Amino acid sequence: MSLPPRHTTVGLLFVLVILAGCGGGPSDTAVSGRLLENGEAVKPMQGMPPGDKGWQMTFTQADVKDPSSGSSYAQIADDGSFRVEGPNKKGLPPGKYRISVEKGPKGKSATITVTDVIEIPKAASVKVEVDAATKTAKVTP
Image (cartoon, rainbow, N blue to C red):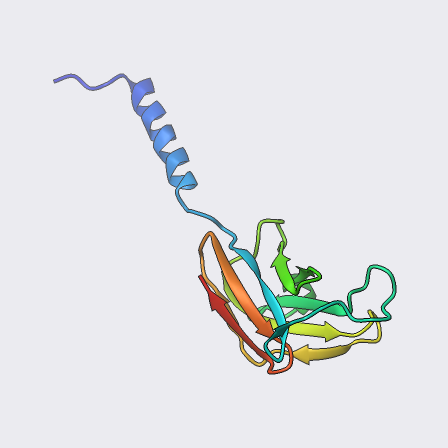
């Protein structure tokens, strides 16, 4: 029995290493959902400056010591739906997150800290429902 040529073995090894690196699945999870107040979808607040809907929402990794380095902001639509682009514009890295909601004009808003710490799983996408009045959040696949 003869052995394959050395360049064939090296080539196969290279292909296996490349394929192994590509098989890890998605690194970020697409996050979307609804922002509620007492169970009802939030709407833009009246009397706000142009471009300010009166609602901002931040997802901060729970295990990060410097919140500014682990924070991502939700893009909230007029119907209360939102999406979080995350640091790579592809969603959030899996892990535990704290959520804060800012209500009112930017710079003069009240901060509402959601009591629940949520877990974003390694998945293609998840839905998150956040209620600013009850300070709760839940994740669904």
